Length: 420
Image (cartoon, rainbow, N blue to C red; front, side, top):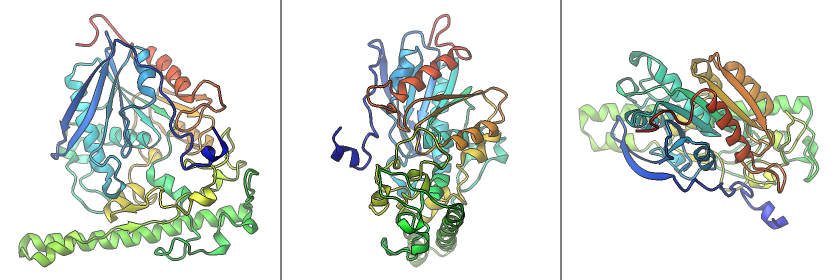
């Protein structure tokens, strides 16, 4: 890879997958969720497989995820599914993604697999934990609305609990992640260049050092920076709640008035633009929660530049989607919040070069799960499964090997008669 390629946005994010077994049989399926949305999935089965791994992410396409061939080669079937909002942050509601996941779990139970194991990679981890939390509750105890007030019929949905949960490079949830990476030095939400120099993470006077050298921030700056990150999210939350409440009030009026003006107001909650969300201090100060990660962020090796780009987490959302998914203060899809409700066996595979799940995160997650059977494994690799060093075994392969070993002692790949 050339130096120019290494600087490219997202360089190294995608790696070539291993080959799938030639005996793999793949079928495509369209599912309808309890609330009538359509979602799609691919079922890949190898001969004799009685356990199926379920991979899903709230916003990414996992159809050809790097773990798919790793698990198939170990003798397991694999189901990959998209959400109704795949690739669209604008309207992503995690409570609806839970309904999407429920449709997939119900489908797999109808296929008569002996075991269904949920697999969460990156943001798929918090979604899986959120789903398990809600599925394990009695119908009457489940959520009835999003944080912004949009009704969601979880109580009436069929929500089978998986038999196990495997996590690879799990970050703490979309909202918690954005809370870490949002730039608190923004003083005008309408101006992507507005800045409070006292909080500028990429100012040399605050501890930043031009790469490739690692930056070094003082404890006082870090404390004020993180407090200011929370204050910025709180300000955006206040705006989102205000707009969501106004739209909901208009919807209620329209139900009795049938006035087109009320309907227009109900639809006009607007969108929220969030500039500069590539500003986690740990991306440039490698001494903070140190691991084997390279300099930079998930978006590339120069977060001091990509922080100002048009691509970023939570850049454009509706008020409802902000509160449900991207707010670290309001979203329920936070892994640590949901983990105490997860009682099925858990495997957490930490990648030592991760730039989103740091050692302290992995330790906190392992401690939070209520399951009696929790296994924590560390393997070399980067967040998206790339090898830690050029020519080394990929993190995806090492994670797949750890998963196959863990599954083999709890959920055999095949048993008499195999998958029906």
